[in-house]
Length: 238
Length: 148
Image (cartoon, rainbow over all chains, first blue to last red; front, side):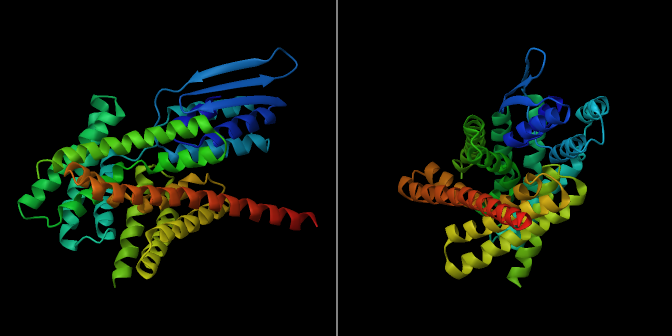
């Protein structure tokens, strides 16, 4: 159960969550187990000699942390091959849950700004706009993180971050430091784009997890809409 | 020269995305390489055929199949590789154009580009599905060979 919760909160696919939990259960001698996973909750039941045990876990916050997904994956592999027992696995998972593996904030912002600059070039922008795109992309990502801490509504902080990006880019173009407003904005918005959600939604839909696929798709759509709205506000003033 | 610039920037951009998604350190370079391969396929095909949908489809299939192989080899979840690689293919530029046209009351142009965005997103989705099928076929063939 704990393993499933960590994977789901870290942005793993639904089928991976179900698969991991059932594999673990099988490794611990529970022959029949059923799991039902949606982006907001897990129901898991284990059949055995004693009356069937069922548990429900509610997932409220989700983020992206692929390293945790990979680590839980390797723990589950070890359990399946019988390398570690129940108590050891439990201890390791608990430890993993409390760990904060994310890169430092400045590193993330630096990565976001670097990505923005590079995307601007990839969308056939001019090299003169590289620095402006980097700065507005970094500013946008940083404001996303800070707004998110302040108001824990994801769509609203995405809207505000897009607004900041538009504002900074407009400032650069108006002062003559940047040349192509469109390219700068496109490049800097890229770090906010819900790419992970989109791919996971499609994978879930294909694997037959219709409920989670649709809800992840809806989340991706709302995110895209929030970003678009934030930019649109700025464009209205141009 | 332009291709080289595209290759370098796409490599950096996808690895940077790996950092944003908090991919394990040792996978960052592989993420970047996958992203670079996918983007080059897209870029060259798009320039050659002048058809973004086909180019996106080809690039997505390439990325997804390669991610499956890498995931198997290094025993890590597939999404680590595929997500970062697919990001550059997301039609962010067109979506932006659509939004801009809507805001400027150019509804006819906006609807046209909105349809294009849908087509591109659909081709990414279809590419992912296609690669899943290819992967399962490969697995079945390998199993049959092992069984003989």
